[in-house]
Picture 1 (cartoon, rainbow, N blue to C red):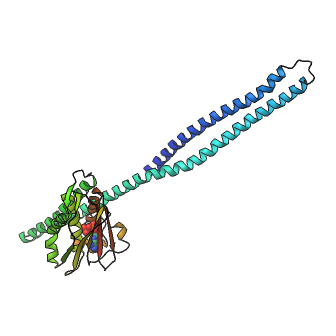
Picture 2: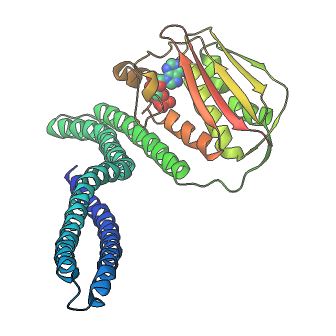
Picture 3: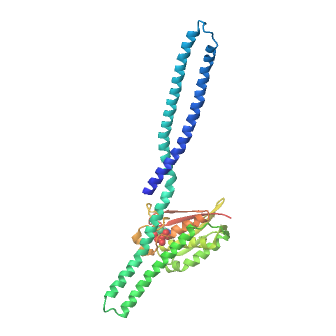
Length: 338
Ligand code: ADP
């Protein structure tokens, strides 16, 4: 982005300016001290010569030596000045290169954030536009039909209602994401992990039953510091995905293991799995692996795992996935223990 190029340039100039002010001030001080030192050396023999009488035989020789010495000192001062100028030029070149590097480095995270933000806006607009365009063209076609009957009109309304439902789902997912991304969780309380998992399971139970999917749990109770609503939402997302991407009559295993300071919760399914090339992006906003298959199959917008990640981070934890296409997936959530 050109705005970042000009910001990098301004920051580079600013850094170089600071370095050069320090370098030039340092050089001025060095020149003053060294020059004074040279002057003092010159003064000593001069005082001695002044003390000699005019008829002293070594007076003229001393005068000549003194003149030569004066020249030498002048040359030394010039030499010192040239060295200091060269030194400052070298500092100018080196600091310009280093400053540009550091300016780019300092601005890179902001640039990435802005890029992600504009990608997000573009994706969100695209997702919002799709159902609106579908509704608009359906209505336009129907209005052009002079013989539109009540049955067709009803069909149109049903289809429009479906699109409105999609818009509603998308806007609630966007609101939820914004809520978790901008929230700093302060009201964490001691919660029973099995209570949270049970409450999340109850919310997706009907979907599991519809696909004849068995939920196997293997854990004893543990306490975590969390927000009930957010943590339940996290497991609803993970359970819901496991159900969505699992075949009928398969099994989902939920287990947890206590570590030193945290608990590791694993959700393992026997579903479609995730391709290696999709794994690094799976938690990105609006990312759907194999988009065409998923949009039609799951109706998802690729926001669920981004929400899950924000919730986990809000609780000071981490979330990761290991998966192989066709071999199922394991989502691992690490949360700090109470
Ligand atoms: P979506 O609403 O599309 O499910 P998510 O953010 O929840 O969005 O998931 C992003 C993508 O990750 C999904 O489109 C899907 O391809 C993949 N995914 C998530 N969970 C699983 C899973 N348990 N098994 C296979 N693929 C999964």
